[in-house]
Image 1 (cartoon, rainbow, N blue to C red):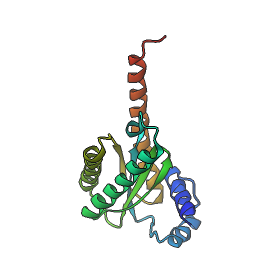
Image 2 (cartoon, rainbow, N blue to C red):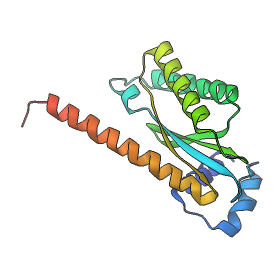
Image 3 (cartoon, one colour):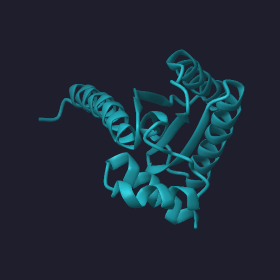
Length: 168
């Protein structure tokens, strides 16, 4: 059931779903997402955190600490959310509300998570925010905004590594 839920959330991120069937599927997983719901997608980029770490146990511990920090921070700001894996080095949060989302609260929650991870394990987690959008298609619009930011960061990071490497 957990894998099916993650798969469904990934399809929402990518915008690959049939709207007429989606509402009933969402309800099966306890999600009351509608076209009246407001969403904001956040991407958690673990690439910089994982650099130089090959110990799978250490990586798993960092992820668990991050998930706990997300739970605490989102709860403190009263933000409803779903957290799930996109790739090994990327996780996504879909924040949702029946009323327009407070972008300042979302930014504050993200900053708290980044700071907590930095304080507990020295890792540098980047959290990229998408736009606040309304409706199920808004999830993918928000995701693609955050994804473009992530791709730019990765491109810059690769360019910096290439500049440090003097081999032709």
